[in-house]
Length: 163
Image (cartoon, rainbow, N blue to C red; front, top):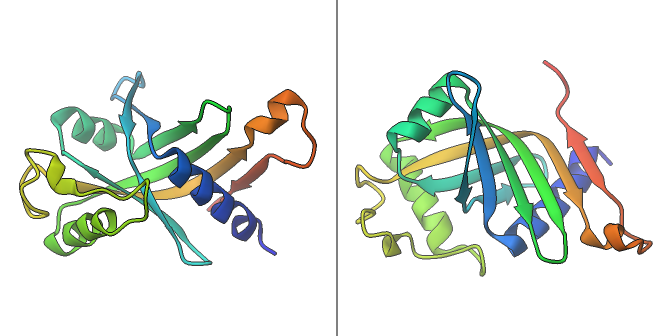
């Protein structure tokens, strides 16, 4: 079994259970900035892709223009953590924005929600609504039970091949 096939489902399960993550980008000077975001992940058995419904603020746009990468870290009170290091691209086309809107609208609880609850997001084609596509190049899943010395759990890591 390929390592991604082992790690991706565990990552999606934990990420969707925790829901919110700290997402970090860097500015043009390499200085980090973090924010709380709410990605949704799709694993088709071969490829893992994440999506974030967001407003295309000048800060986010500038950071991703300077460096098109984002680090996402999920943490739960039981110390379960998972991390995705990702290449990020903006999606402004109507077809993709409608797909992402529907992905969240019809997503499973607790990760699914109605994007229309955000006042500026009047529709998936509103200027204030955009999508970020996340393509992980590294994943880590760390069960919190390991911190208390419990046996049976393991840290899972995956990194995309170079190139």
